Image (cartoon, rainbow, N blue to C red):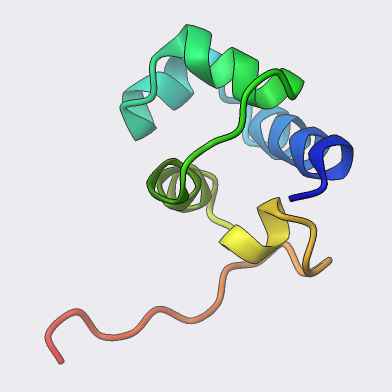
Length: 81
């Protein structure tokens, strides 16, 4: 993951959605202090944490990682199939 670009995307999306770090804690289950460290680049997130953050922010893991510039999430597969 590109630390600088990915972390700024994370912060920018959160602010765009008008979410606080405490709101992100509620949505993801990631402790606010850990989330703050992730957002500031002092800590990496796990695959599962990235997945939860992407779902909470309505984006893709690829966007958070800087692998695409498309902010919208990919179409989700049908959970019943």
